[in-house]
Amino acid sequence: MSLSDERLAQIGHRFSELEARLASGTLEGDAFVAASRDYAELEPVAKVAREVADMRSELANLQKLDDPDPEMRALAAEEIARIKEELPELERQLAVAMLPRDAADQRPAMLEIRAGTGGDEAALFAADLYRMYERYAAEQGWKVEMISANANDLGGFKEVVANVAGTGVFAKLKFESGVHRVQRVPVTESGGRIHTSAATVAVLPEPSEVDVQIEDKDLKIDIYRASGAGGQHVNTTDSAVRITHLPSGLVVICQDERSQHKNKAKAMQVLRARLYEKMRDEAQGAEAEARKAMVGSGDRSERIRTYNFPQGRVTDHRINLTLHRLPEVLEGPGLAELIDALIAEDEAKRLAAMDS
Image (tube, rainbow, N blue to C red; front, side, top):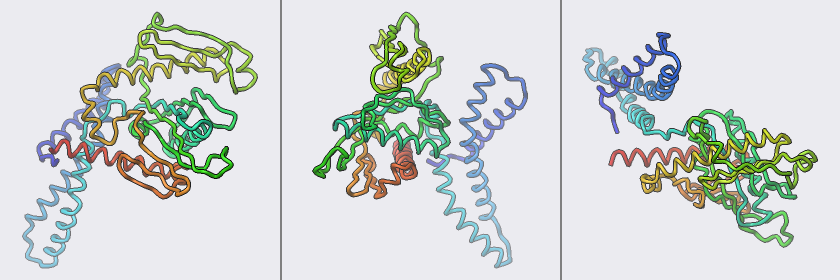
């Protein structure tokens, strides 16, 4: 998808207009917020569009060059060859930058990991996944805050929910939703046999209170004494909170804080994210088939990746990519390679769909 010079000029003009409006000091309130949002969205597109326009202009000037000096003609020919080699990649970057974006891409996200088949081993694997995402988030400069956790006696998680805050969190983590499978000898297995266990990952974009408005009359809130591991204060005070959203039937429990108010705030944060995801699923129902044609539908029941410990490999089944660097993936850097490959594949498929 190659844009015309006229379209490049339109992008540049629109960006200059936004710059002028923001610099004028006349915008206030919602108008300023809207203009700032438009500016942030257009800036990366305008930057690449300017580079493409400059390179095309330079190529045109060089091709018109009629210098009698053979040395100058040779230099011009070298420069023309360089531009012709680099320009298609720059035009591809521009096409990618102009692809329609998920409105939630720049949002923080709620990360939910649940042990699946495999008992204690699945819970230990869920804990491994949580640490993997923690390390990846640290590399990205994001902040991870655990919202709630249901741990077992071996240090695994039957379920863990965390908030991942930062810029572009959902854009990078959204393809992690699905079933993650592990093949290894469990620490609880004395016979040395390889077991297959699984954990489910769900990544939900975090909405603002404006995006999801929840009426008090739609909530049933129960306060009770927390149970399970968590320290003396958790088990001896009525601080655990269970919130039921009556219209949808969604239930959220939070008991990790000693403060009832903090548990309620965290539970509401999770509930809001789940309701927002439900709204998004309903809104995108008509696009379900189109989404399946991309890297993945985001369906948390879809098996997406296998972590094979005996062979030291990780395979992403959606893009048939295998990395024989399992420890590096679990430490974060290898995960970045997987996520970048998923994003690139999704962009390539969407570009192909637009060209067809």
